Amino acid sequence: MQNNGQTSQNHYLLDTNIFFHIIELIANAPSHSGIQKLQEGHCYISELTRIEIISVLGKYARGMSSQTQICNKIISETGSVCGKKFCVAAKKGWKKRVIADWRKLIKDIVTGNCPMFTVETIPVTHEVCEEARLFISHALRYHFGSLDAMIAATAIEYKKRTGIDLTIVTYDKKLLAAIKADGTIPYITPSSPMS
Image 1 (cartoon, one colour):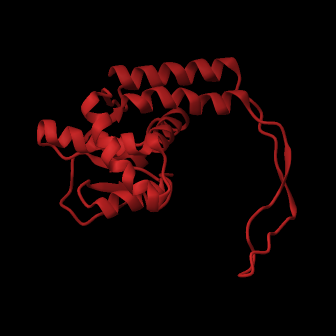
Image 2 (cartoon, rainbow, N blue to C red):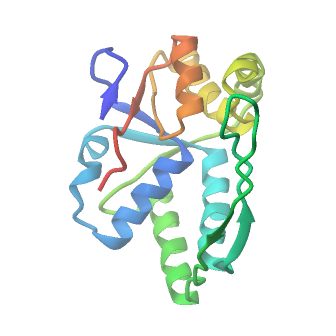
């Protein structure tokens, strides 16, 4: 993992992409060492992540039929668009038992009943929303979404309220660019997915 050069932090705010990846690691390899650094600290998620993780789970649960799409990437300095067709392979939906197991694992992690990994949930408050309103100004340059602003705002507000730095852990490059520009939030990003 790479960090922003600050001293090692022991309080981590997990973005939804990291939280999902951790759940995936635990579900598939409970003794996985990729989360060891996080296990040594205290981990948090925003209440938004607690809600959003079910939406992410739903994508896997539903699966996806194969699709043919047309590439709209610009491939020249003159603005020419690729226009070639490409296929996205079908993905089978998960079985009900797998979904039930994942939902139970998520619940256990969030309620502190998972012996391998737990998180504390930070509520979305008026103060967090106010911090997000300020942080979202970075979106004009870095193109991240409002939920990402809420994650950053959660770390900012938590520091103001408790004096404790929450190090944001995320794979989201746009959010990371904004965090770096803001310069007030510690961060860690795995240089490659925890495997």
